[in-house]
Length: 248
Image 1 (cartoon, rainbow, N blue to C red):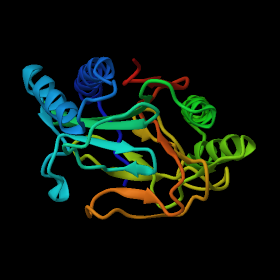
Image 2 (cartoon, helix red, strand yellow):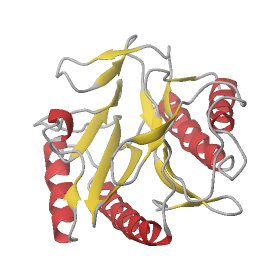
Image 3 (tube, helix red, strand yellow):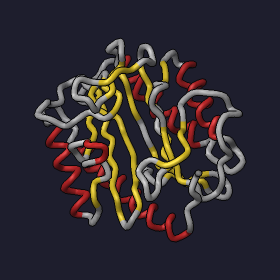
């Protein structure tokens, strides 16, 4: 069942999402060659606690960190370590926090120094795919309108969307109904209603859309080793459309 949020719920979630976006902006400032992925994780966790919240990811299904840090062919759920960012990398940061009984969740991919033309295109297309997805969030549309729009735009740019992972509802639980695929038919899925809060998260690859489990047991990587990119926003379905709660 898809949960409709009350005005009070929305107020709390809006506050949490705003804090989360602030933290992501601070993490972006630290992206440079030589910083370790664990340093980014420690900074994220420190900010979360300082602002009165708790990490959503740490301990979730055994995940050992507050921040997911995924590089290049890693799509999502990379575990922070001593590994350092280097010039030309794409790094995806996925972060969640828990505040006053509700979760917030977002992700961004950043360039590390100068990146290839292909990586620039991937970054631009994935970012835009999230933007076009939000335009389909309004009462009366089906979830499939979001999914189909992302797929059609990404494939028109000669990239692929990951099919084995998806966006989701969010609230008192980190992952709630509905699942929001990044591909499919416009007529698929339930109808959007005012008060729903959703996490839209296109995951896009340069090569094939097939993925596999990483060696660490948590991450997912592209099966063909191609570059990947991940953007995620938390959005509220409003009376006339949607509000991006994690807008930077």
